Image 1 (cartoon, rainbow, N blue to C red):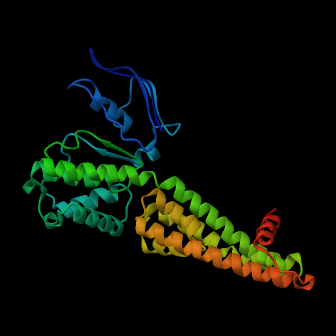
Image 2 (image 1 turned 180 degrees about the vertical axis):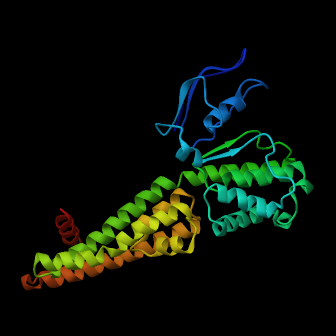
Image 3 (image 1 turned 90 degrees about the vertical axis):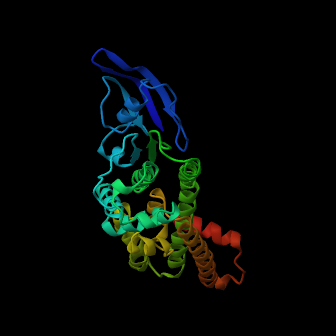
Length: 318
């Protein structure tokens, strides 16, 4: 959520903004409307940290604008900001690396966008040979390449013909929709991870003879969890790297690593595959743990029910 509180900005004797206040909810598409000189671009530059207001405050998710929050912002300015003598491909990679991506990750994401917008043929062309609309497409890709939490577009359709306006407009809406999948996916991986490890720990407790055995085996079982936390730091920098991909797919590490990738817009096919493997593994592990529990209480002669297994797992965790 963005809270804009009493923002004012003056240029000499000209008042650009006068005590502007409003709130932008998370996951929304919000437009600034007004005539030329109304202060729209000034407010955008304040939001991106380019300039500071004379008074007032901007809060992003309850925090003032800082270097970390600025890195999570994508900004498409009204003015063209491309190096005219550089080739399109090398320039987009250069700017993506400046946003914190590795060269390999930047090239992978950029080519995916170039194919999506059907501009792959322009990879080795110099920027000054591009039309105004084509340059706008390149700048749009640069503004979204690091998968920002907040995307600010100043005159995004400038120079585009009606067909490309529709194409770019649809991509903006798709980016907005992608943000709505984060919360339910987070819940799935959190609950799935809890059930997975709870079942394993419960089975260990049922078969161990004393607390020392439980501690030794539990330490071994938690190694994938510890490793996934370590890999998470790599995921933050390169969410689509091979290391991040495989650790987000393996069920015993995916509850941690995939949540990190989701924040940066993991491909939906990766998320669905990870969900399927985690759900399948949880079912198998709970079933196996139930058999272990049944063996542990075999002397009673009664059959263990699913309700008893769930109760048993809950008691072990408590």
